[in-house]
Amino acid sequence: MSRQQPDGRWRTVESPRRRFSGEFKTHVVLLFLAGLLANVPLAWWFSRALSAPIKRFAEAADRLGRNPDAAALQRTGPPEIVRAADSFNAMQARLNRLINERTHMVAAIAHDLRTPLARLSFRLDGLQPPLRDKALADIDEMKAMISAALDFIQNDRHRGERAPLDLRLLVESVVDNATDIGADAKLLPGPEITLDGDPLALRRAVMNLLENALKYGKHARLQLQRDGEDGVLWIDDDGPGIDPTQREQLLLPFVRGESSRNRDTGGIGLGLSVAHSIVLVHGGDLRLDNRARGGLRVTVRLPCMPERR
Image 1: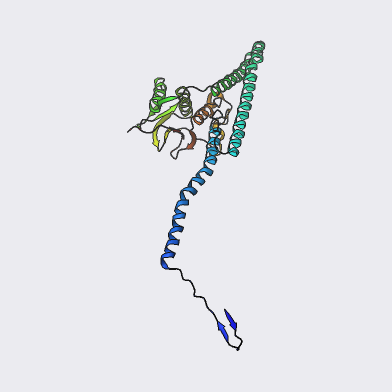
Image 2 (image 1 turned 180 degrees about the vertical axis):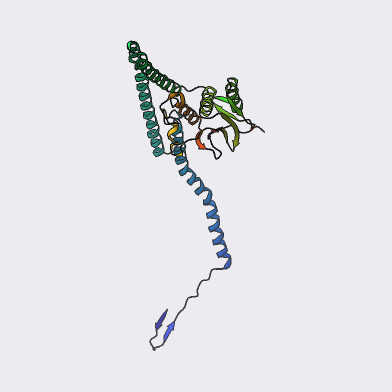
């Protein structure tokens, strides 16, 4: 600071600059690092607290997509998360109610169609044999489709008790039954795979897939492998394969693997759909692929129990 004196001279006053010692700077840096390290666990916990509800919602949505009867979402967390969980559970309940109503309606229609078909069969007795035989064959096909639809609905409603089971023994039993009636089916060597499932439902799924393989091919080869936490079942045949553009459609009910309407070759179109539904309920996945050497490969992937040490 400068100030002019009465005699005309200037007086300047300077205050000494305060310098921070090296030790003080070191203390400041260490304090900053200590505060940063102390906040890392807090930040990690906070990020986990924010992401955990989102993860639970994603897992619940995936379960709902695979099984409408999946367990409801837990009501835990902040009030906003609880309200969102309540809305999600209410949506799941509405979907289940809608599915059940549609299922009951289709079952009632299919059941009621049997009566007019029976009357129609009785009235056809007066027709000439060629025309009568063709008409009766069409009615028999309609009856078979109705019976298949009712069986599909009944099995879709049924949820059997789950228990630990050896998938290899189950597949081996299905293959043995097929070979007993002359089918060329074989289970190749592979590991034991234990999973938690409904034995009756899984047995039906494997039977449907094996019957489908033997329907379109002369030989069927099955193999089990373990892939991480999943058990994988391959069912290979030497048939004509499929159109890759119809891979997803063939897993839908009443869609056949060939273009004709002959139920002796094309079936009703429920075998793959039933197997796919059973696999999905068990948290698995079913995929259809053409083999490079010809034929079709059905890949069934199911979550399995940890290997025994």
